[in-house]
Length: 65
Image 1 (cartoon, rainbow, N blue to C red):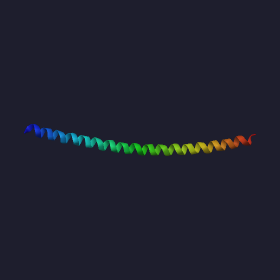
Image 2 (tube, rainbow, N blue to C red):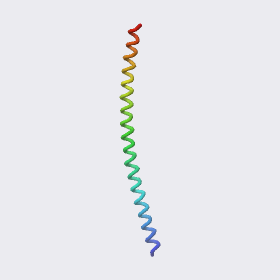
Image 3 (cartoon, helix red, strand yellow):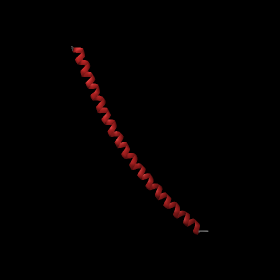
Image 4 (tube, one colour):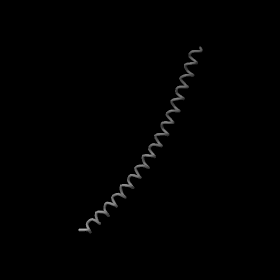
């Protein structure tokens, strides 16, 4: 009777550990997704700024001719 109860307890413990680890992975994946979104927005803003600067520079170059 001891061994079956031990097996059940260890099985429950294993499932509990996997649940906790799964929750941690889910939380970190959400955090990573938010960070990727934030970084993508920053890259897009920098790209727009660079495009505006290049357009202004091209116009300035055309007036020098």
